[in-house]
Length: 348
Ligand SMILES: Cc1cc2nc3c(=O)[nH]c(=O)nc-3n(C[C@H](O)[C@H](O)[C@H](O)COP(=O)(O)O)c2cc1C
Image: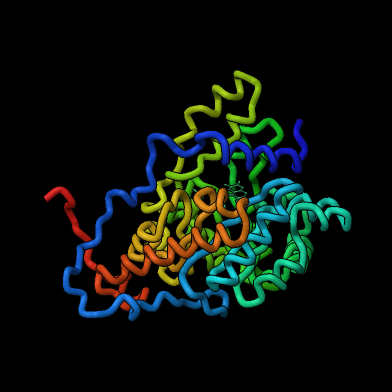
């Protein structure tokens, strides 16, 4: 068995060094094309990408998604993310706080969590994180308060990762009763609860159940990017377990499909698009399909490891790409972009 700290460190190395993206399933963004506006009648500088999330004004509709990394590197990664997020006024989520929460006071120092993140990013939404499976054994409301306090968070992400859990030997296999636990958490949490997947997507039907449970913010984290079945398969040494995990590399609801389905199921929800987003054009497509915000994880990890300046540069490129997509569709605002025309059949 591998302890949680070692496991997180292995995840980071695997995502950085191996090819663990989905192979046959894609995000679906490649099939979507905006109709080009050759005479946009506006200046590039007229594009306003600002939006509001969790009562904070953002410079662009972006989120750096939750990533854990093991204690040696998590501190550097989290600091870089906080710096870049503050610079661009975008939201960020920390990786799972489980180890720190279970480790008591000594655990707080581990994993790069602490109030220094809020000090480095005073103006942007910071999202706490733990897994839904933990709600079985924990007093959810108490853990939520501790997770939120630890970093001064504006909201709490609860991640759903049933596939990742069952393909690893030490993973949680019992997911019974968690909808009820989530509903109780949504009632008692001092901040909004966000529910996300980790790369296999959230369906419209599940979004409806989550909405009924009181969850108002959903991050679809769809398929087409990082495949957690592939990440876990890389960690496994047992050939049988590897063989079991292998076909699930391409499991899941493609990100574009998940955005459309969740928006149709929950018209009033705040929807975060993530899972395999590569650039600002994918962000534009996400917004057009119904998302409010777009999140990046693996695609910004290398930059985050290189430091705040590198990450800020990477985010700056995404912002500029999004701005150009708005300009070339004649959209001054994100509200305009939601109605931008699409090419229905790209081959003609
Ligand atoms: C190194 C790494 C660590 C991650 N750790 C967490 C985590 O602790 N909690 C969580 O909710 N998601 C975690 N994720 C999942 C991401 O937040 C995201 O949902 C998923 O990777 C899909 O997005 P992507 O295709 O842009 O990577 C992690 C992702 C990466 C790459």
